[in-house]
Image (cartoon, rainbow, N blue to C red):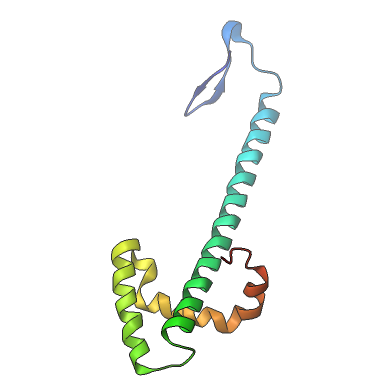
Length: 118
């Protein structure tokens, strides 16, 4: 049976025999790993985009009532403080405003792709 030394790749097994087609096998497995990583990145980016759109939409509709009222600015600041405490800097005031702005550019397209409506 072959063993793996982290710095040296696959090493020969007992009696000095190498696994058949080791370079091809290694290349195939690397390809599988790379493809899986790529699919994961695409899925995560899609989910984050949908999340940001939904957050922006919720703030716009429920808090700002489709208007740019002064009180809405303070609500965004308050929401941001609470969300940053719970989830980190990705929900800063600046980022929440970007999420609201996302609606301007993707309103119809994301609505048509939104399969997560509850």
